[in-house]
Image (cartoon, rainbow, N blue to C red; front, side):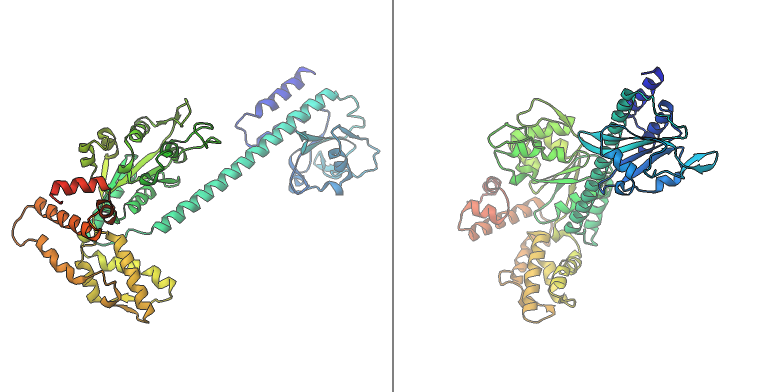
Length: 508
């Protein structure tokens, strides 16, 4: 082939891996046609799933052609071209109508086509498009090198397939982004809002806003039921990673033998049952946030591996000798006192300091001044909607009583308690929730006994807290038949921690 043809073909080949737009690549092919072959006009078609040939680039033809779609059955010449892998010639005296008659441009006038040639474009046995050439001169295509045509057709077909695959990948990526955004919005709506007007909850909001825009690790602490997961979602939602997923991991529920695989993934054959490669939670969270709930429950061996990910952004799948890099923001939560866990040796000090870059303490419900009435109105909204009871409300005297309770289970306990009372009220046909609608186990008179923890004179807070903890553990044991494991379950904490605390406080 002449050097000029070689250069055109090389340019088309180089465009396969270039950053040119799809339109620019299409046009580069058509420009190459007019350089290599003796034609006055040419058209590049792509074959779509509907069975149509759609023009994507033209040279020497009216631009109106680009606005049309050609059904091969209605255009015998195009039908003949796509039915064979060989180039097809149509002489000037061919009786078959030419699809471009009247569209060939010459000195600003539309004239009919004389000679025509076309060839189909196939990749791996699949039709991807077609290319046609038209000439005013009779016999213009008599001496075209068949090797040049085959090479040009192969490169053009590869270009069309490459563009089609890129379009498909972009469409799939956009679809996945839309799905991810939908899931993120659903997750946020499911976790609700941070409700409250107290100084404590306002300070919590300020803390979240302060740290959200950074990539610092956040350790969320607080009693069970205070809304630590809601805080984590709020941090992520206000961060620059908000358009990426936040992957949730319940560290307390990780299977003992599969915990490492769950977090860091595994390769095929790493252990019995590992039938394929699998990405771990950290890989899934790459670019986004990972929320490690109940992080204090992680075994020490996993704590060391977690520390490596936090320090270097590097992880290793189970059974693999390759290291993967991830960019993940860490949010961890626990209801344990990790400082005490560090002292006892059950939690790594270096990991604690890595997680505790910006600690956020979620206030207990009993310390939130005036928030119970607001929360009650919000928490009952679900009941109102489900049971079509828009006028359901709590009696003001009941709200005063609710504010005086200790709420050891915090907002979760308040929600469950209110829901049960609301259902009792609806069952009885009442629209106002009164004291008699609450469970018998919730004795409002018991609150008077808490006055011993609220001294009128100066007293050590440490002693008051220890006194309360001692009474609480003894109460849990009495409710659990003296069984420490059941008492720990009653108080929703680890048995070993409860036993050590009880022994320290002199509980027998």
